[in-house]
Length: 487
Image (cartoon, rainbow, N blue to C red; front, side, top):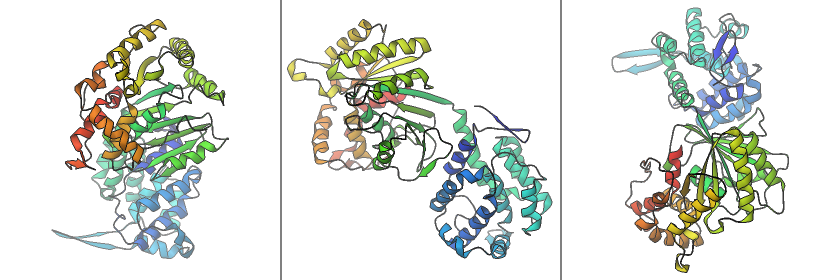
Protein backbone atom coordinates (compact mmCIF):
# COMPACT_ATOMS: atom_id res chain seq x y z
CA UNK A 1 0.00 0.00 0.00
CA UNK A 2 1.46 3.38 -1.02
CA UNK A 3 0.91 6.08 1.59
CA UNK A 4 -0.06 9.51 0.28
CA UNK A 5 1.39 12.61 1.95
CA UNK A 6 -1.14 15.28 2.84
CA UNK A 7 -0.72 18.14 5.31
CA UNK A 8 2.40 16.50 6.71
CA UNK A 9 0.60 13.27 7.67
CA UNK A 10 0.23 9.92 5.97
CA UNK A 11 -3.01 8.79 4.42
CA UNK A 12 -3.59 5.06 3.96
CA UNK A 13 -5.29 5.30 0.57
CA UNK A 14 -3.55 4.95 -2.76
CA UNK A 15 -5.36 7.86 -4.39
CA UNK A 16 -8.22 10.31 -4.06
CA UNK A 17 -10.33 7.98 -6.18
CA UNK A 18 -9.69 5.04 -3.82
CA UNK A 19 -10.66 7.17 -0.84
CA UNK A 20 -14.05 8.14 -2.29
CA UNK A 21 -14.69 4.56 -3.38
CA UNK A 22 -14.13 3.59 0.26
CA UNK A 23 -16.67 6.17 1.44
CA UNK A 24 -19.21 4.93 -1.11
CA UNK A 25 -18.69 1.33 0.04
CA UNK A 26 -19.60 2.11 3.66
CA UNK A 27 -22.77 0.87 5.27
CA UNK A 28 -24.58 3.80 6.88
CA UNK A 29 -27.35 2.04 8.81
CA UNK A 30 -25.86 3.31 12.08
CA UNK A 31 -25.59 6.89 10.89
CA UNK A 32 -27.72 8.91 13.39
CA UNK A 33 -29.81 10.46 10.59
CA UNK A 34 -30.56 7.08 8.99
CA UNK A 35 -33.88 6.66 10.81
CA UNK A 36 -34.91 10.31 10.53
CA UNK A 37 -37.73 11.69 8.42
CA UNK A 38 -37.09 12.37 4.70
CA UNK A 39 -37.25 16.12 5.37
CA UNK A 40 -34.54 16.04 8.07
CA UNK A 41 -32.35 13.83 5.88
CA UNK A 42 -32.77 16.11 2.90
CA UNK A 43 -32.03 19.22 4.96
CA UNK A 44 -28.95 17.61 6.53
CA UNK A 45 -27.40 16.44 3.27
CA UNK A 46 -28.25 19.48 1.21
CA UNK A 47 -26.52 21.65 3.78
CA UNK A 48 -23.60 19.23 3.80
CA UNK A 49 -23.23 19.28 0.01
CA UNK A 50 -23.67 23.05 -0.06
CA UNK A 51 -20.42 23.47 1.85
CA UNK A 52 -18.43 20.49 0.61
CA UNK A 53 -19.00 21.22 -3.08
CA UNK A 54 -16.28 23.87 -3.02
CA UNK A 55 -13.62 21.32 -2.03
CA UNK A 56 -11.23 20.76 -4.96
CA UNK A 57 -10.97 17.01 -4.39
CA UNK A 58 -14.64 16.38 -3.75
CA UNK A 59 -15.82 18.16 -6.91
CA UNK A 60 -14.83 15.25 -9.15
CA UNK A 61 -16.88 12.77 -7.12
CA UNK A 62 -19.79 14.88 -5.85
CA UNK A 63 -22.40 13.43 -8.23
CA UNK A 64 -21.39 9.84 -7.48
CA UNK A 65 -21.42 10.40 -3.71
CA UNK A 66 -24.73 12.24 -3.84
CA UNK A 67 -26.45 9.57 -5.93
CA UNK A 68 -25.05 6.87 -3.62
CA UNK A 69 -26.41 8.64 -0.54
CA UNK A 70 -29.81 8.94 -2.19
CA UNK A 71 -29.99 5.15 -2.30
CA UNK A 72 -28.43 4.49 1.11
CA UNK A 73 -30.35 7.16 3.05
CA UNK A 74 -33.83 6.28 1.87
CA UNK A 75 -35.97 9.40 1.78
CA UNK A 76 -33.14 11.81 1.02
CA UNK A 77 -34.04 13.57 -2.22
CA UNK A 78 -31.54 15.89 -3.87
CA UNK A 79 -34.20 16.86 -6.41
CA UNK A 80 -35.73 18.99 -3.68
CA UNK A 81 -32.54 21.04 -3.52
CA UNK A 82 -34.08 23.91 -5.45
CA UNK A 83 -36.62 24.35 -2.65
CA UNK A 84 -33.98 24.21 0.06
CA UNK A 85 -31.76 27.16 -0.73
CA UNK A 86 -32.51 28.92 2.54
CA UNK A 87 -29.26 28.23 4.42
CA UNK A 88 -30.58 29.69 7.68
CA UNK A 89 -33.47 27.26 7.64
CA UNK A 90 -31.17 24.32 6.97
CA UNK A 91 -28.82 25.43 9.73
CA UNK A 92 -31.69 25.76 12.17
CA UNK A 93 -32.74 22.16 11.51
CA UNK A 94 -29.15 20.91 11.90
CA UNK A 95 -28.58 22.82 15.17
CA UNK A 96 -31.96 21.96 16.58
CA UNK A 97 -31.80 20.38 20.03
CA UNK A 98 -33.33 16.93 20.06
CA UNK A 99 -34.50 14.75 22.91
CA UNK A 100 -34.06 11.00 23.22
CA UNK A 101 -35.70 9.09 26.04
CA UNK A 102 -33.36 6.46 27.45
CA UNK A 103 -34.06 3.81 30.06
CA UNK A 104 -32.15 5.70 32.71
CA UNK A 105 -32.88 9.26 31.69
CA UNK A 106 -33.15 11.77 28.89
CA UNK A 107 -30.40 12.54 26.38
CA UNK A 108 -30.20 15.87 24.58
CA UNK A 109 -28.30 16.02 21.30
CA UNK A 110 -27.86 17.95 18.07
CA UNK A 111 -26.81 16.94 14.55
CA UNK A 112 -24.33 19.80 14.26
CA UNK A 113 -21.34 17.76 15.49
CA UNK A 114 -22.25 14.84 13.25
CA UNK A 115 -22.60 17.35 10.43
CA UNK A 116 -19.08 18.70 11.04
CA UNK A 117 -17.61 15.19 11.23
CA UNK A 118 -19.33 14.10 8.04
CA UNK A 119 -18.16 17.25 6.28
CA UNK A 120 -14.56 16.53 7.32
CA UNK A 121 -14.81 12.90 6.22
CA UNK A 122 -15.98 13.99 2.76
CA UNK A 123 -12.82 16.06 2.41
CA UNK A 124 -9.89 14.01 1.20
CA UNK A 125 -6.79 14.20 3.40
CA UNK A 126 -6.12 15.48 6.89
CA UNK A 127 -7.45 18.91 7.83
CA UNK A 128 -5.66 21.48 9.98
CA UNK A 129 -7.51 23.00 12.94
CA UNK A 130 -7.06 26.49 11.53
CA UNK A 131 -8.45 25.47 8.14
CA UNK A 132 -10.37 28.43 6.68
CA UNK A 133 -13.27 26.36 5.37
CA UNK A 134 -13.80 24.74 8.77
CA UNK A 135 -13.58 28.08 10.52
CA UNK A 136 -16.20 29.48 8.17
CA UNK A 137 -18.60 26.69 9.10
CA UNK A 138 -17.95 27.06 12.82
CA UNK A 139 -17.97 30.85 13.03
CA UNK A 140 -19.41 32.64 10.03
CA UNK A 141 -22.52 30.58 9.49
CA UNK A 142 -23.28 30.13 13.18
CA UNK A 143 -23.29 26.36 13.34
CA UNK A 144 -22.63 27.09 17.02
CA UNK A 145 -20.02 24.36 17.45
CA UNK A 146 -17.99 24.39 20.66
CA UNK A 147 -14.41 25.16 19.62
CA UNK A 148 -12.95 22.45 21.86
CA UNK A 149 -15.40 19.91 20.51
CA UNK A 150 -14.54 20.96 16.96
CA UNK A 151 -10.85 20.36 17.72
CA UNK A 152 -11.59 16.83 18.93
CA UNK A 153 -13.70 16.05 15.86
CA UNK A 154 -10.91 17.24 13.56
CA UNK A 155 -8.38 15.04 15.37
CA UNK A 156 -10.81 12.11 15.28
CA UNK A 157 -11.50 12.31 11.55
CA UNK A 158 -7.81 12.81 10.76
CA UNK A 159 -7.02 9.71 12.82
CA UNK A 160 -9.56 7.68 10.82
CA UNK A 161 -8.14 8.84 7.50
CA UNK A 162 -4.65 7.86 8.66
CA UNK A 163 -6.01 4.58 10.07
CA UNK A 164 -4.68 5.51 13.52
CA UNK A 165 -7.38 3.58 15.34
CA UNK A 166 -5.70 3.77 18.72
CA UNK A 167 -6.03 7.57 18.78
CA UNK A 168 -9.48 7.43 17.20
CA UNK A 169 -10.72 5.03 19.89
CA UNK A 170 -9.40 7.26 22.66
CA UNK A 171 -11.30 10.20 21.21
CA UNK A 172 -14.38 8.06 20.65
CA UNK A 173 -14.96 7.88 24.39
CA UNK A 174 -15.04 11.66 24.68
CA UNK A 175 -17.79 14.11 23.90
CA UNK A 176 -18.85 14.83 21.18
CA UNK A 177 -17.17 11.91 19.37
CA UNK A 178 -19.35 9.33 21.12
CA UNK A 179 -21.97 9.78 18.41
CA UNK A 180 -19.42 8.99 15.68
CA UNK A 181 -19.01 5.27 16.34
CA UNK A 182 -20.47 4.49 12.92
CA UNK A 183 -17.50 6.20 11.23
CA UNK A 184 -14.98 4.38 13.38
CA UNK A 185 -16.58 1.00 12.63
CA UNK A 186 -16.66 1.56 8.87
CA UNK A 187 -13.06 2.79 8.61
CA UNK A 188 -11.86 -0.08 10.82
CA UNK A 189 -13.69 -2.62 8.65
CA UNK A 190 -12.24 -1.13 5.47
CA UNK A 191 -8.75 -1.08 6.95
CA UNK A 192 -9.01 -4.81 7.65
CA UNK A 193 -9.87 -5.27 4.01
CA UNK A 194 -6.79 -3.27 2.94
CA UNK A 195 -4.54 -5.27 5.25
CA UNK A 196 -5.50 -8.48 3.47
CA UNK A 197 -3.44 -7.38 0.48
CA UNK A 198 -4.30 -8.12 -3.14
CA UNK A 199 -4.02 -11.24 -5.29
CA UNK A 200 -4.24 -10.76 -9.03
CA UNK A 201 -5.23 -13.47 -11.51
CA UNK A 202 -4.85 -12.97 -15.27
CA UNK A 203 -7.36 -15.18 -17.10
CA UNK A 204 -6.54 -16.19 -20.68
CA UNK A 205 -7.85 -18.71 -23.21
CA UNK A 206 -9.26 -19.12 -26.69
CA UNK A 207 -12.81 -18.09 -27.57
CA UNK A 208 -14.09 -21.65 -27.20
CA UNK A 209 -12.67 -22.32 -23.73
CA UNK A 210 -15.70 -21.16 -21.72
CA UNK A 211 -13.63 -18.51 -19.98
CA UNK A 212 -16.49 -16.00 -19.70
CA UNK A 213 -18.83 -18.63 -18.21
CA UNK A 214 -16.13 -19.54 -15.69
CA UNK A 215 -15.68 -15.90 -14.66
CA UNK A 216 -19.42 -15.23 -14.49
CA UNK A 217 -19.72 -18.24 -12.20
CA UNK A 218 -17.13 -16.75 -9.84
CA UNK A 219 -18.86 -13.36 -9.62
CA UNK A 220 -22.34 -14.85 -9.39
CA UNK A 221 -23.91 -13.00 -12.32
CA UNK A 222 -23.56 -12.61 -16.10
CA UNK A 223 -21.16 -9.69 -16.47
CA UNK A 224 -18.25 -10.87 -18.59
CA UNK A 225 -19.22 -10.82 -22.28
CA UNK A 226 -19.40 -14.07 -24.19
CA UNK A 227 -16.47 -14.37 -26.57
CA UNK A 228 -18.85 -15.89 -29.13
CA UNK A 229 -20.54 -12.52 -29.39
CA UNK A 230 -19.21 -9.75 -31.61
CA UNK A 231 -17.40 -7.73 -28.97
CA UNK A 232 -14.43 -5.42 -29.17
CA UNK A 233 -11.02 -6.25 -27.74
CA UNK A 234 -11.19 -4.98 -24.17
CA UNK A 235 -9.68 -5.89 -20.84
CA UNK A 236 -12.26 -6.49 -18.08
CA UNK A 237 -11.22 -6.62 -14.44
CA UNK A 238 -13.33 -7.59 -11.45
CA UNK A 239 -12.07 -6.93 -7.93
CA UNK A 240 -13.71 -8.38 -4.84
CA UNK A 241 -14.51 -5.66 -2.28
CA UNK A 242 -16.37 -5.97 1.04
CA UNK A 243 -19.49 -4.35 -0.40
CA UNK A 244 -22.52 -6.63 -0.36
CA UNK A 245 -24.86 -4.61 -2.50
CA UNK A 246 -23.02 -2.21 -4.79
CA UNK A 247 -20.55 -2.10 -7.65
CA UNK A 248 -17.97 0.45 -8.76
CA UNK A 249 -17.31 0.86 -12.47
CA UNK A 250 -14.41 2.72 -14.06
CA UNK A 251 -13.28 2.89 -17.68
CA UNK A 252 -9.89 3.53 -19.29
CA UNK A 253 -8.19 4.11 -15.91
CA UNK A 254 -10.01 7.42 -15.54
CA UNK A 255 -10.24 9.15 -12.16
CA UNK A 256 -14.03 9.10 -12.07
CA UNK A 257 -16.16 6.08 -11.20
CA UNK A 258 -19.81 5.10 -11.04
CA UNK A 259 -21.54 3.43 -8.13
CA UNK A 260 -24.31 1.00 -9.10
CA UNK A 261 -26.61 -1.06 -6.89
CA UNK A 262 -27.89 -3.32 -9.67
CA UNK A 263 -25.25 -4.06 -12.26
CA UNK A 264 -26.41 -6.29 -15.12
CA UNK A 265 -24.95 -7.67 -18.33
CA UNK A 266 -26.95 -5.14 -20.37
CA UNK A 267 -25.23 -2.27 -18.52
CA UNK A 268 -21.81 -3.56 -19.49
CA UNK A 269 -22.92 -4.32 -23.02
CA UNK A 270 -23.25 -0.57 -23.65
CA UNK A 271 -19.71 -0.01 -22.40
CA UNK A 272 -18.46 -2.96 -24.41
CA UNK A 273 -19.97 -1.56 -27.61
CA UNK A 274 -18.26 1.79 -27.09
CA UNK A 275 -15.20 1.81 -29.34
CA UNK A 276 -13.50 4.43 -27.15
CA UNK A 277 -13.61 2.12 -24.13
CA UNK A 278 -10.51 -0.06 -23.98
CA UNK A 279 -10.67 -1.13 -20.36
CA UNK A 280 -13.54 -1.73 -17.92
CA UNK A 281 -12.76 -2.11 -14.20
CA UNK A 282 -15.49 -3.38 -11.89
CA UNK A 283 -15.41 -3.74 -8.13
CA UNK A 284 -18.00 -5.73 -6.20
CA UNK A 285 -18.48 -8.89 -4.19
CA UNK A 286 -17.82 -12.35 -5.57
CA UNK A 287 -20.64 -14.89 -5.67
CA UNK A 288 -22.28 -15.38 -2.23
CA UNK A 289 -21.25 -19.04 -2.44
CA UNK A 290 -17.55 -18.13 -2.59
CA UNK A 291 -17.68 -15.20 -0.20
CA UNK A 292 -14.27 -13.97 0.90
CA UNK A 293 -12.93 -10.75 2.43
CA UNK A 294 -9.70 -10.99 0.45
CA UNK A 295 -8.98 -8.48 -2.28
CA UNK A 296 -9.12 -10.82 -5.26
CA UNK A 297 -8.71 -9.27 -8.70
CA UNK A 298 -9.68 -11.17 -11.86
CA UNK A 299 -8.33 -9.80 -15.16
CA UNK A 300 -10.21 -11.05 -18.21
CA UNK A 301 -8.59 -10.87 -21.64
CA UNK A 302 -10.15 -11.33 -25.10
CA UNK A 303 -10.17 -14.77 -26.76
CA UNK A 304 -7.05 -14.85 -28.92
CA UNK A 305 -8.51 -16.71 -31.92
CA UNK A 306 -11.09 -14.20 -33.09
CA UNK A 307 -10.72 -14.42 -36.88
CA UNK A 308 -12.82 -11.26 -37.29
CA UNK A 309 -10.60 -9.10 -35.10
CA UNK A 310 -6.89 -9.81 -34.67
CA UNK A 311 -6.63 -7.09 -32.03
CA UNK A 312 -7.98 -9.64 -29.53
CA UNK A 313 -4.70 -11.54 -29.68
CA UNK A 314 -2.70 -8.33 -29.43
CA UNK A 315 -4.57 -7.17 -26.31
CA UNK A 316 -4.08 -10.55 -24.60
CA UNK A 317 -0.36 -10.59 -25.41
CA UNK A 318 0.03 -7.06 -24.05
CA UNK A 319 -1.83 -8.07 -20.89
CA UNK A 320 0.53 -11.00 -20.34
CA UNK A 321 3.44 -8.62 -20.73
CA UNK A 322 2.23 -5.52 -18.85
CA UNK A 323 -0.64 -6.30 -16.46
CA UNK A 324 0.08 -6.60 -12.75
CA UNK A 325 -0.75 -10.20 -11.84
CA UNK A 326 0.50 -12.97 -9.57
CA UNK A 327 -0.92 -16.02 -11.35
CA UNK A 328 -2.14 -16.84 -14.85
CA UNK A 329 -5.32 -18.92 -15.06
CA UNK A 330 -5.17 -20.60 -18.45
CA UNK A 331 -8.60 -21.97 -19.47
CA UNK A 332 -8.59 -24.85 -21.97
CA UNK A 333 -11.54 -26.47 -23.75
CA UNK A 334 -11.46 -30.18 -22.80
CA UNK A 335 -12.88 -31.13 -26.20
CA UNK A 336 -10.31 -29.14 -28.20
CA UNK A 337 -7.07 -30.12 -26.52
CA UNK A 338 -4.04 -29.36 -28.70
CA UNK A 339 -5.68 -27.23 -31.41
CA UNK A 340 -3.45 -24.91 -33.41
CA UNK A 341 -5.04 -21.83 -31.82
CA UNK A 342 -4.37 -23.15 -28.34
CA UNK A 343 -0.80 -24.12 -29.15
CA UNK A 344 -0.02 -20.60 -30.38
CA UNK A 345 -1.37 -19.02 -27.16
CA UNK A 346 0.32 -21.66 -24.99
CA UNK A 347 3.73 -21.01 -26.57
CA UNK A 348 3.43 -17.24 -26.13
CA UNK A 349 2.19 -17.59 -22.53
CA UNK A 350 5.11 -19.87 -21.62
CA UNK A 351 7.68 -17.46 -22.99
CA UNK A 352 6.15 -14.41 -21.29
CA UNK A 353 5.51 -15.85 -17.83
CA UNK A 354 9.02 -17.36 -17.81
CA UNK A 355 10.47 -13.87 -18.31
CA UNK A 356 8.20 -12.39 -15.64
CA UNK A 357 8.63 -15.38 -13.29
CA UNK A 358 4.90 -15.81 -12.74
CA UNK A 359 2.91 -18.87 -11.78
CA UNK A 360 0.42 -20.57 -14.12
CA UNK A 361 -2.53 -22.83 -13.34
CA UNK A 362 -4.37 -24.68 -16.11
CA UNK A 363 -8.15 -25.03 -15.90
CA UNK A 364 -9.46 -27.71 -18.23
CA UNK A 365 -13.08 -26.68 -18.71
CA UNK A 366 -16.13 -28.34 -20.33
CA UNK A 367 -15.13 -31.77 -19.00
CA UNK A 368 -18.80 -32.78 -19.10
CA UNK A 369 -18.72 -32.50 -22.91
CA UNK A 370 -16.24 -35.33 -23.52
CA UNK A 371 -17.79 -38.34 -25.27
CA UNK A 372 -17.73 -41.03 -22.62
CA UNK A 373 -19.96 -43.25 -24.75
CA UNK A 374 -17.37 -42.98 -27.52
CA UNK A 375 -14.68 -44.50 -25.32
CA UNK A 376 -13.43 -41.18 -23.95
CA UNK A 377 -13.00 -40.93 -20.19
CA UNK A 378 -12.04 -38.37 -17.56
CA UNK A 379 -8.98 -40.47 -16.68
CA UNK A 380 -7.94 -40.42 -20.33
CA UNK A 381 -8.46 -36.66 -20.49
CA UNK A 382 -6.25 -36.20 -17.42
CA UNK A 383 -3.43 -38.23 -18.98
CA UNK A 384 -3.77 -36.50 -22.36
CA UNK A 385 -3.69 -33.07 -20.70
CA UNK A 386 -0.55 -33.88 -18.72
CA UNK A 387 1.15 -35.22 -21.88
CA UNK A 388 0.06 -32.18 -23.90
CA UNK A 389 1.35 -29.64 -21.39
CA UNK A 390 4.61 -31.42 -20.56
CA UNK A 391 5.17 -31.84 -24.30
CA UNK A 392 4.93 -28.07 -24.61
CA UNK A 393 7.55 -27.42 -21.94
CA UNK A 394 5.51 -27.24 -18.71
CA UNK A 395 7.06 -29.58 -16.16
CA UNK A 396 4.72 -30.88 -13.45
CA UNK A 397 1.84 -28.66 -14.68
CA UNK A 398 -0.74 -27.51 -12.15
CA UNK A 399 -4.06 -28.64 -13.59
CA UNK A 400 -7.63 -28.28 -12.37
CA UNK A 401 -10.69 -29.71 -14.11
CA UNK A 402 -14.09 -28.06 -14.28
CA UNK A 403 -17.51 -27.71 -15.83
CA UNK A 404 -18.19 -24.01 -15.40
CA UNK A 405 -21.57 -24.20 -17.13
CA UNK A 406 -22.83 -26.84 -14.69
CA UNK A 407 -21.59 -24.79 -11.74
CA UNK A 408 -23.18 -21.64 -13.14
CA UNK A 409 -26.58 -23.25 -13.63
CA UNK A 410 -26.53 -24.80 -10.16
CA UNK A 411 -25.57 -21.46 -8.68
CA UNK A 412 -28.34 -19.67 -10.59
CA UNK A 413 -30.93 -22.03 -9.09
CA UNK A 414 -29.51 -21.63 -5.58
CA UNK A 415 -29.51 -17.83 -5.91
CA UNK A 416 -33.01 -17.75 -7.44
CA UNK A 417 -31.70 -16.39 -10.71
CA UNK A 418 -33.64 -17.25 -13.89
CA UNK A 419 -32.59 -20.05 -16.21
CA UNK A 420 -34.03 -20.81 -19.64
CA UNK A 421 -35.93 -23.97 -20.59
CA UNK A 422 -32.86 -25.14 -22.52
CA UNK A 423 -30.61 -24.49 -19.53
CA UNK A 424 -32.99 -26.46 -17.30
CA UNK A 425 -32.64 -29.49 -19.58
CA UNK A 426 -28.86 -29.18 -19.28
CA UNK A 427 -29.07 -28.91 -15.52
CA UNK A 428 -31.27 -32.00 -15.28
CA UNK A 429 -28.38 -33.89 -16.87
CA UNK A 430 -25.81 -32.29 -14.54
CA UNK A 431 -28.05 -32.98 -11.54
CA UNK A 432 -27.69 -36.73 -12.17
CA UNK A 433 -24.20 -36.74 -13.67
CA UNK A 434 -22.42 -34.88 -10.88
CA UNK A 435 -24.12 -36.87 -8.14
CA UNK A 436 -21.75 -39.72 -9.04
CA UNK A 437 -18.49 -39.83 -7.11
CA UNK A 438 -16.61 -40.69 -10.30
CA UNK A 439 -17.76 -37.34 -11.74
CA UNK A 440 -16.26 -35.31 -8.87
CA UNK A 441 -13.75 -33.35 -10.93
CA UNK A 442 -11.75 -32.18 -7.91
CA UNK A 443 -10.22 -35.63 -7.45
CA UNK A 444 -8.50 -35.49 -10.83
CA UNK A 445 -6.57 -32.27 -10.18
CA UNK A 446 -2.78 -32.40 -10.19
CA UNK A 447 -2.82 -29.32 -7.93
CA UNK A 448 -4.24 -30.32 -4.57
CA UNK A 449 -6.00 -27.51 -2.75
CA UNK A 450 -7.58 -27.40 0.69
CA UNK A 451 -11.25 -28.23 0.87
CA UNK A 452 -13.58 -25.63 2.38
CA UNK A 453 -17.31 -25.51 2.87
CA UNK A 454 -19.77 -23.47 0.86
CA UNK A 455 -21.29 -20.34 2.25
CA UNK A 456 -24.82 -21.82 2.12
CA UNK A 457 -27.33 -19.15 1.22
CA UNK A 458 -30.55 -21.20 1.38
CA UNK A 459 -32.13 -23.00 4.31
CA UNK A 460 -34.93 -24.71 2.41
CA UNK A 461 -34.77 -28.45 1.74
CA UNK A 462 -35.71 -28.19 -1.91
CA UNK A 463 -35.56 -25.60 -4.69
CA UNK A 464 -37.61 -25.88 -7.87
CA UNK A 465 -38.15 -29.63 -7.33
CA UNK A 466 -34.45 -30.21 -6.74
CA UNK A 467 -32.87 -31.24 -3.45
CA UNK A 468 -30.75 -28.41 -2.10
CA UNK A 469 -27.84 -30.62 -1.04
CA UNK A 470 -27.72 -32.25 -4.48
CA UNK A 471 -27.62 -28.83 -6.16
CA UNK A 472 -24.64 -27.93 -4.00
CA UNK A 473 -23.09 -31.26 -5.00
CA UNK A 474 -23.33 -30.23 -8.65
CA UNK A 475 -21.46 -27.00 -7.93
CA UNK A 476 -18.97 -28.79 -5.64
CA UNK A 477 -18.23 -31.67 -8.01
CA UNK A 478 -18.05 -29.44 -11.09
CA UNK A 479 -14.62 -28.30 -9.93
CA UNK A 480 -15.22 -24.55 -9.87
CA UNK A 481 -15.57 -24.40 -6.10
CA UNK A 482 -12.18 -26.05 -5.69
CA UNK A 483 -10.67 -23.38 -7.96
CA UNK A 484 -11.84 -20.68 -5.55
CA UNK A 485 -9.48 -22.17 -2.98
CA UNK A 486 -6.68 -20.62 -5.04
CA UNK A 487 -7.92 -17.37 -3.57
